[in-house]
Image (cartoon, rainbow, N blue to C red):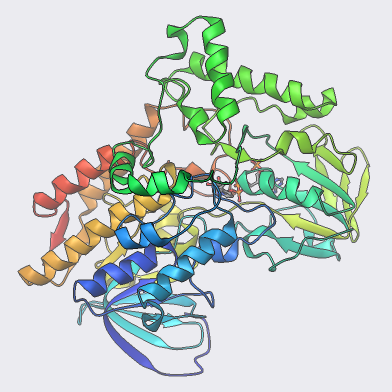
Amino acid sequence: MSATPTTTSVSDYEVLVVGAGFSGLYLLHRLRAEGHLVHAVEQAPEVGGTWYWNRYPGARCDVESVDYSYSWDEDLQQEWTWTEKYPAQHDILAYLKHVADRFDLRKDIDFNTTLTGAEWDESQGLWTATAADGRVYRARYLLMAVGCLSAPKDIDLPGFQEFTGRVLRTYDWPEGEDLRGQTVGVVGTGSTGAQVVPALAETVADLTVVQRTPNFVIPTRNRPLHEGELDEIKADYPARRIRNKTHPAGVFRSDNPKNAYDVDDEERRATFQERWEGGGINFLGSFADLMFDQAANDAVVEFVHSKIDEIVDDPETAASLKPDGYPLGAKRPVVATDYYETYNRSNVHLVDVKKNPLETFTATGFRLADGTEYEVDTMVLATGFDAFTGPFTKMDIRGTGGRSLAEIWNRDGAKTHLGFGASGFPNMIIVANVGSPSVLANMVTAIEQHVDWISRLLSTMRDEGHTMIEAQESAQEAWAQTVEDVAAMTLWPNGDSGSWYRGANVDGKVQLFMPYAAGVVEYGTTIDKAAANDYEGFTLS
Ligand code: N01
């Protein structure tokens, strides 16, 4: 708790929600409706979480608009108008602002409030959380609705401090900035890089993309919704939401039930081609065994390689863009518009730093190992996140006996029981993050599933006179093992992908597979069973 207090105000609540993105807003609404005294704090001056901050050109979600939205209010889903198949950042932010206004949520949110730490007071059974400006919040329950991808990865580029030009990071991009006419460098070719690169290519004079690990990039095929399409969806909305909850990914996909080698070469290629034409994450439903069978995955890898060869004019650039050494899906698959096509533009250049390492940044740009120098006006860093754990470990969270969550997670990796609680941190409840399907599903479905479970838990505790819940250490160990074991049944952990799913993108981070790979259906059964069994694995008192 580092900041010098400028105020000593102390506010008392039953529940303190940290974050006002998709999770925090629904928690606030749901818990308030159930009569809990609940309040939220939010670092930003506005609601929206990740969709407030990530305003970079091209930012768009790869889950369809009509599914990447709340399902818990029929009037809300009937009255909101989505205009495109996939929502742009500003569309999602507008939607969340509307939700905040419509359900009068803002009155219970303190904006511009960054919590620096939270401490469990054992004698009183309360959390005391401190904001950067010194304000203090006391609450029985601390609900961590902080997002999985909200703490940027530290800059780990050689000699970056030498660079004196402008630096923009995609995670907090200045509103409306498109770097028109400038000479620009971009580091990072993940989901963010693959969206910002084609968008910037349209406006900047010259764009150099620094790529370390190539990704599999599937075309989005975004389009305006056809006339009448939204009305048809709305007529069937409740049933559509139920269908979404029957798919492990929390969004209905017409997955092909066949395995890749159940069919001949021609049918296999035609199937990939059809899904590629359709665009989006549905491509992963081409065959049932893509994430389970290496040969099936090799087939899809070969198909994507062939598309890169087809699209990219320069053979050397095409060769550099082809991912190898890890299965498609082991790193979060990227969905973007005109990504490969962008490398055919005369103002866009790819620098493959696996072949020719980035030696150092200089005052005016950067230099490669072979001595090639690049001069840029602005460097754009799309270098990713300290995923899952970062938003927790950047705070000083102290549990029973003063134990530090950051110390434990940095040393042993992040472990939870069923994704909701960590042993030694009573009444700290985690929302849709480590140990639950979270990022491997439609985040909104995963969030709703978590919030519904948490709200049931808190109401049950109130009704039964409990005031404390804590994950049992043995249950937490067993669940962490289950999360690993389930991931090990898939190709997700395989290869040299450096994926943030397992912390491999951050130097020195303990590598554990963090999301629960079995998906929301299996997970829902597990958590409901635990609840029905008197919250098995948790101690309630
Ligand atoms: O981050 P990333 P992101 N030198 O970690 C490179 C979601 N999302 O912000 O792979 C050189 O995926 C790094 O290279 P490497 C989605 O879940 C969704 O792009 O480590 N390069 C990589 O290329 C996504 O997965 C949407 O070798 C360095 C890139 O930076 C998640 O957010 C849109 C480097 C980081 O990629 C994160 O995506 C956007 C270094 N020192 C985001 N350090 C949609 O819904 C890092 N890199 C569409």
